[in-house]
Length: 121
Image (cartoon, rainbow, N blue to C red; front, side, top):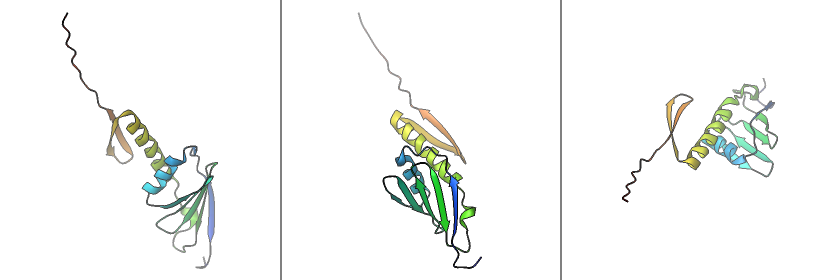
């Protein structure tokens, strides 16, 4: 492939992008530079690939690198980071604690408070 080639690949992200905040948090946690508009999110990876995510969840990735082409882009890290952002937000909402037990495995615990109730009649 000539060094001045640009390759574009489109994939269906299949992430419910209704909550854009989770998607933004996921992309930022991966170290991507992120710009957000009303119905669009643009990001740039560390390798220089650029991506566009529309409000319908469609992702388009473009690469002008001769070393890594857009057709090699792996969308799974975005899906995992999105899932983690949802779990972390939910855990924070309910006061749960998250502990990573292995790669892609987490333990979620809710602290229980024992209270003693003394009553005299």
